[in-house]
Image 1: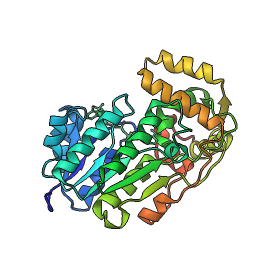
Image 2: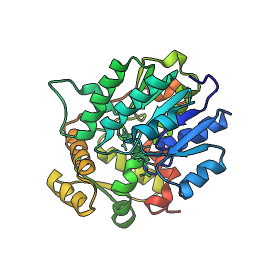
Image 3: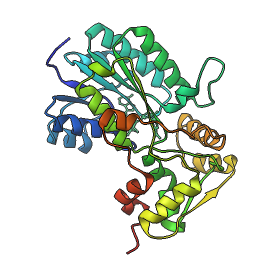
Length: 304
Ligand SMILES: NC(=O)c1ccc[n+]([C@@H]2O[C@H](COP(=O)([O-])OP(=O)(O)OC[C@H]3O[C@@H](n4cnc5c(N)ncnc54)[C@H](OP(=O)(O)O)[C@@H]3O)[C@@H](O)[C@H]2O)c1
């Protein structure tokens, strides 16, 4: 292991939660060396280089690429897009991290794993793969820290921004289920704090939620407050949502995951509160209202 080697951040060019990209910035702000792994050379790679990261290109499903990017690193943040090869990528990373020797692997997972067991999994391949990935990392004997966030507030950007902009409505099949979405920026603050000083966190599992668990009418009220105009919640049948998602041409793995997320919301399984953000970073997680205020333009702007 390279004691003074850089910290590897995978999925560093991400644009959805963009946890990897935010983690790179936070670590660089702390003066720590960062190796940012991207899938291809593009503007996003150039932007990472411009802020001081060492950028490496590779595929997390290619063992030789993973060995090349991990070699020389002392710590790893492992996260990638919701995708069918997630378990394979995790196990590949585990094999390589054992071979190279690292002092911490911070693994992105999901809070739904907290409720899973052999007898009780879900119909989302992504959630099952996170559950299996956590098992495999535990068997690996690696020094692992597990991050289990609930739904990201950033997910409302693709899922709700068009209807909030055009109709003043959030349209999702969550019924009266409560939810406590967390900002991916807060998740990134947790990951960066752990990577900067992993010792006290090794072996721990951090569940991360926002500060409030409420139904979607409550979330819509936070949107209204942030945008200074009425935003309401419309519940729709799960089948209608699935049909709309299919029209978007998303990969089947992602569509199935989103449909399951809707079903679990409806069943009250996202009604959770956890204080991981504040415990690790010393600052509470931001609310839906604060998030929407920060991203008001995406949701059609705040009425003056
Ligand atoms: N969204 C939520 O509500 C939520 C909630 C809890 C947990 N999570 C977990 O968060 C993770 C996603 O994090 P995020 O939203 O920060 O990610 P993100 O913004 O979607 O970024 C993921 C990055 O992974 C890269 N990637 C995908 N496949 C790759 C491969 N084979 N090799 C190398 N790089 C690859 C993508 O590259 P390209 O940009 O080139 O495609 C992308 O830049 C998932 O594990 C998900 O389960 C998400």
